[in-house]
Image 1: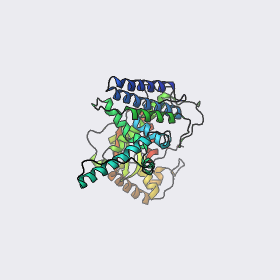
Image 2 (image 1 turned 90 degrees about the horizontal axis):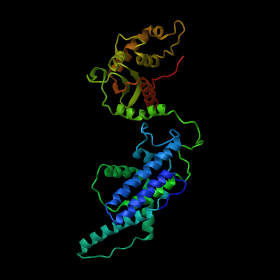
Image 3 (image 1 turned 135 degrees about the vertical axis):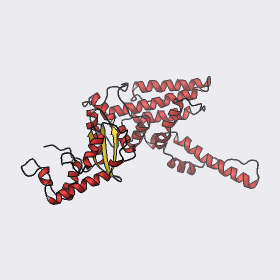
Length: 352
C-alpha cells in the first residue's frame, strides 16, 4: 500500500505510521484498532488538505481557531465532487466475493435444513455473480455513510477488537491517492491555486453561519402570541407560513421587534414586513424619496390602509423562529445567509 508522490508529505507520513502500527499487530493484536484509527486520521487530513486547496482559505490545516468541516461533511463533499470514485477502489473485488459467499452460505444452510444433511460444500462465486455484485457495491457511498461512526466509536473508547485494519488501510490508500491524482472537481474546477486567500477572521465568521442556520430551523416555531418567556434578547428571526419562509430580520431586542411587525398601531417604519406585503397585494409599486411617493403617502390610500392592517394581522399568525446572536457583524452575515439559502421573497438588501 503506497501513497503517490503527489500526496502531501504530512499525509504520507501519517499513513506510514498507520502501516507500522498494522505491522506491530503480529506482536500486539489490539494494535489493529490503533492502525485503523491512524488510517481514519490520514484520510481526514487528506480531505482537509484537498478542501484547503480547493477553496484557498488558509495556508495551514493546523489552525485551531478555524472550524473545518467534519469528517462526515468532508467525505460527502468528496463523493459529490468526485474526489473519490467507485472505479478507484481495489477492495471492490474482495467485497463482492464476500457478498456472494454470504448468499451461498445462507442458501446452503437453508438447503441443509430442508434435506437434513450435516454438511454441504460451498460453491465458489461464478464470474458473472462477482461482476453483478461489483456493480452494486458503491464504496464511496459506504465510506461516507459508515466511516465517521466507526472512527467516532474508536475515538470514544470502544472495546471493539477485530482484524479489520487491512481493509481500512486499503480503502484509505486508494481514496487518498484519488484525492490527489489531479482530477478536477465535478462542481468546482480550481483555476488558480495562487489566487488571493480570504481574510481568516472573516472566514471564521462564515464557518459559523451554517450551524446557526440549522439551529434556527431546528426550533419548533411559535407565533407572536406564544413567544416564550426565556427567549434570547439579541439575534435573528424568521417569519414563515408552513414550509414557505418569507422574511428574515435581525434585532437587539427580538421580542419587541417581532411584536412591532404585527402591532396594529405600528407605522410603516416599524412594520416594514407588513408594508412589503401590502405593496404586493395592493399593487402600490415601490416607494421613493420623492415628495408624495414615500411609504407614508402610499399607505394613506384607503385600500392600502385596510390592507396594511390585514397584513399585520396575517404576520401575527405566522410561524416565527429565532436564534441568538449577540455579535452585530455575525448578526448581519447570518441575516443575509438565511435569506439567500431560503430565498425569502420579502427581503431586499438594495440601497438608494
